[in-house]
Image 1 (cartoon, rainbow, N blue to C red):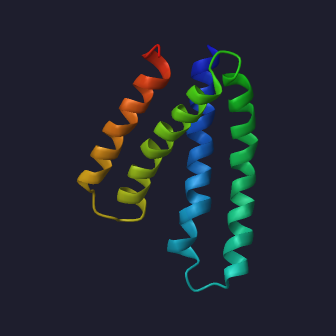
Image 2: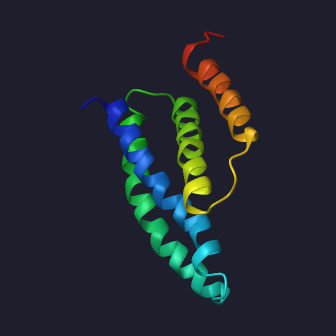
Length: 115
């Protein structure tokens, strides 16, 4: 498998873990003590780091640091929107589309514009 596809796959998986670590406690641990939410989130985030670090190492073989960052941001939004709408039951907002369009501009400038 190509380094870019491997990087994307690992970043998607790491973002799933991180999204649950950052926001899942708002649904499941609202009545728990803050320290419990922090410890559970850290436990989930450990798996995120176990995927993110190799993703960045592999990706850095063929992508610049800026390209890795923008790729991460695009994947973060692509994971967050379904999480927010389907899992957290938030209403879909047109702002998600606008944010995606802005990120497409960032992808263009980081990957294709020679400036």
